[in-house]
Amino acid sequence: MSLFTDTWFQTIRHLKTQIRMRVWIFMNLIQPILWLLLFPQIFKSVSTLPGIGGDYLQFLAPGVVVMTVLFGSAWAGMGLLHDIDMGILSKMLATPINRLSIIASRVIASMVILVVQAVIIFIIAVIMGVDIVTGVPGVLFAIFLISLLGLGFAAFSNGLAVLLRRPEPLMGIINFIALPTVFLSSTMMPAQLLPDWLDTVRQFNPVDYAVVGVRDLVLAGYVWSDLWRSLLVLAGWAAAGLAFGTLMFRIRAE
Amino acid sequence: MSIIETNQLTKIYPGNIRAVDSIDFEVKAGEVFGFLGPNGAGKTTTIKMLNTLIQPTSGTAVVTGIDIVKSPAEVRKNIGYVAQDVGVDEYATGRENLALYGRFYRLDGQTIKHRVKELFELVDLTGYEDKIVSTYSGGMRKRLDIAMGLIHQPQLIFLDEPTVGLDPQTRVHIWDYISSLAKAMGITIFLTTHYMEEADRLADRIAIIDLGKIIALGTPAELKQSIGGDVVTLSTCETGEEQCEEFIRRTQAALSNKPFVLGTQATDGELAVYVNKGESAAPTIMRLLANEGIEVETLSVSKPSLDDVFLKYTGRTIRAQEGTATTFAQMQRRRYRR
Image 1 (cartoon, rainbow over the protein chains, first blue to last red):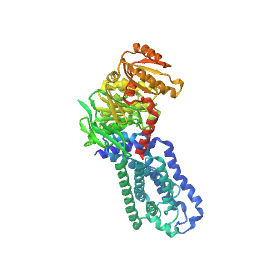
Image 2: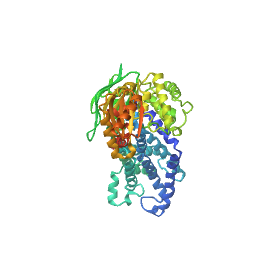
Image 3: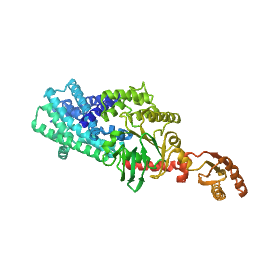
Image 4: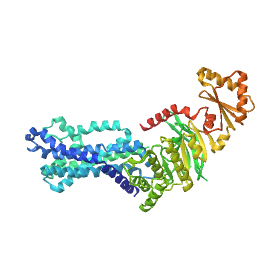
């Protein structure tokens, strides 16, 4: 009970904080639009390659949704770092607050934001001419898959924040991980065009499972062999992130 | 009735740093208890053990009747904590900050509404409830911070260096709020500070802590009385350091066996001479030193301050220690954060 209410009131706090940062909201919406406009131009000549289907925007849109969610949630730990640095965390720990609610509220707030972002990007993509074969139910399914990916990254990020306690190493790790996980997947290129080693590596990359699942739903329909695998792997990823986050919080909070 | 009672409370940090070393003291319900010492003396570590943020290495304490080691969660319900860092959320409004803490203490919406109004009045922030905290001045943030520690009307509140980093004028304001708090709410206040004046002005009783140990405890008046009537401070430092030490050594030799001298203490090229009656002792001292051929540059007579008390018990002034002690405290904090 206390876990639920404590989490609720802190989630509200985090969401209010985000909403008050106008620049942040603006940039987060501009960025995916930029990707959607820019990449099909850069990769114009590859759109005729097999596996893309003649329209790179159509191929890329699912990847852009996943990328936006990945980048957003990977940075989730920065907010907690700010609380640690300002002495807000230690003050909270001296109250009867449920310990777990501190990290749970941060992860939930990240999820709410990434769902809203994903919906907006899907809408923009449709406006730009992307055709989603499974329609609204497919989009909801896609958002569920992406949420699991984001949940995992947000929880890992918060766990790392508690572990490292400084912004510099956290920024280093996130920068190190974020872009490579995009390129070590089929986000930009269809799997059949990737070299063999990369095709093997991507199977250990949770981002790839999100991209494959979402792309199926957008381009191909309900390919259950892929979707089940994505669902299971991403659920495992989210659970691992939560386990790591709560463990770090237990042993390192203070 | 005691609201805090410690029993051999000890905290040893890695590297065998004895931050707090087997301290025993008691805080009575309703009093303002000052914990006075230089930076790095162990004040914050003591507070963090008493408010359950860290576990003692050994020993324990009973806070509001509950053992801090056995049931930390229960202790948290009864205490308020205002840390040295102003832990307010600057992206939220003052009301939101306070209300969130109200929720942490399981207060209902209606109660929170009343308390917010009362507390904003108490700390003189009425009218700023719905302003974002980033628009507050440093003093306003500290007042909000203090109010956040009071939202659940705790029996006991810990104030860790409540005026550190504030300008002198704001400091005096915060002192007024703390005194009015003690009177208006009848709350017990445990306060740490390295400002002598702050302890002197606010605290009913003071414990002086240095290097993790309590070296003196009593009311400010008692502590000052333990020194004697007056302090005569002599110096001749403008002539260079070597001569300075020579001056102190010779002066001490000339005065120490005189019956009217209660004690002497050297520091920073000055010599403090504790006597019963400063006005009559000063000319005598001058005559005695003239006979010995010792030249005195300056002489002052003063009532003993807590500074003198600290000097008497540690052999150092609290100010002289600050430079090195700060570095030590920062080192500790950094080590702890990693």
